Image 1: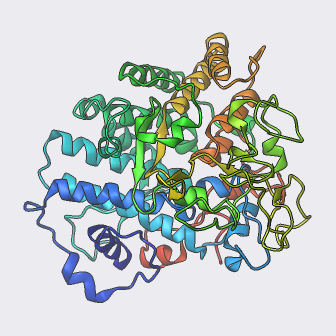
Image 2: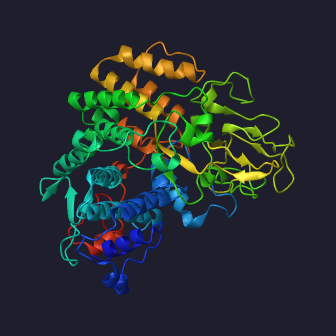
Image 3: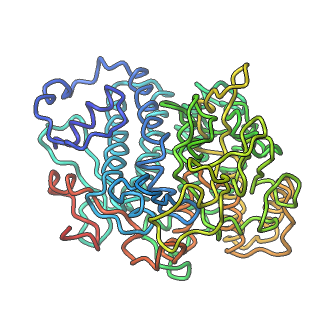
Amino acid sequence: MKNYIYILFAILSISAFSCTDLEVEEIDSEVVDQDFSNVNVESRLDGLYNSFGGFMIYQDNTYALMEVTADAQLIPTRGTDWGDGGVWRQLHQHTWTSRHPQILNSWNGLNGLTFGANQILLSNPDPQQEAEARFIRALARIMILDLWGKVPDRDPSLPVDSNPIVYERGEEAEHTIAELIGLIEEDLADTHINNLPSTGPGAAAEDLRRASKAAALHLRAKFYLNKHILLNGAGNNSAANPSPESADLQQVVEDVDQISAEGYSLQSDYFGIFESPHTSTESIYLITGGDGANPRIANTLHYNHNFVLNGGGWNGFATTSEFYSLFEGPEDTNAPESGQEIRRGYVPNDDLGRGMLYGQQYDNNGNALETRGGAPLFFTREMPEELTGHGEATGIRLIKYPPLYNEDGGPGGGPANQIFFRYADAVLMKAEALFRIGNSGEALNIINNLRDLRGATPLASLSEDDIIDERGRELYIEFWRRQDLIRFGKFLEPWLYKPQSEDYRLLFPIPITAVSTNPNLTQNDGYQGE
């Protein structure tokens, strides 16, 4: 139990759950309190929101599990930069183990949220506070189930030496995933959602970082779209996946319609959505904390891109030529007005571009940038044969959140928030649900309306591949690519630097420290003996 006690301490101190020493005997007496009658519920809720933002806002940990393991993002090792003991290569190539530090940090952070929410629910919250705690708990449980396939849970009122129960699949399970699904549905029931505020688009960032009706409806829609996978597990291709229930898909449609009724709408200025997230008509739920959007900007820009907080980028994250080719436009350029769709982005000759940064790079005064060795800074589609041994300029870069400038024109950092739930995602979830129900005509109209807004050619018909590709074009580096690929049976397929993955890679291993401290936890298939 020491790991769960440590997590509670981490929540109370609003940490980013980065420590891996889970045996912290001396703090037990400070944090264990089974009388929750005097808890400051509002303060605890604020701490949970801060904690979630703290470990989601950076490029590692849970973001890395959700995006770096997928096909749109890779982190080449450039000399010794981004080597980091191979942790990034392991995620991209699906060779991670139960000792991977980012898997451990993610496990600790998300399980800490469930424990903190459980505490609040024992602390006499008012109806809105209860609904917020249930939203946080449902969000954490869904993410844990998605990433690991089993979910520990401990009642904070029990003695501290009691081991968490575990909801898991299998005939021998004492607590089943079906039981957990019912608890998630209870947390996201209309009874509780209706106790949340109607925080419409353009609200203050402080309001958009907290649970609202629209945020809970979005979470519920995402839950029901993936429920058949969460409940039964995924196959190694779309044909092997279980089928969703029509009633669940209809719930997705109804929830998205309710989000629309809350005032959210698609925004025509695609990159403007990310320039000021809290003013966008699409921003449903924000994550805040730490350095805001700066990590999402700096991790991809070159060292000589002097745009972020008076310093250069970290020159790491890139994408593949295959993902670049998903977008309409000429293959050899993405200069402004060269025929590419809006979402692929552009690189002007007088500033940093947006979207996919390809070709010669410039500063905000129109000067052509160079590598540290003095060569033209030209981001290339071509890459070496291995994920190691890359140069400074290999790989097209992805950037959505723009660096902002001070009044004197100097770099001033990026937006203070990142978008976690966005209306375009909701619209695409509705289109997918309609398609799977059999209403492909309405689904096609929804997707073509979005494509028209993004400057892309309308589709003549609609297939599963069209839907997953459209989600990739619209939502790249927005947390959901791994989950989407699994739902469409494509997560195990080979892509650049990654061969076909083993079936068990659909789930991550339970961190070795968690298995060793909770006898109710067993390791996921494929990872035993590590």
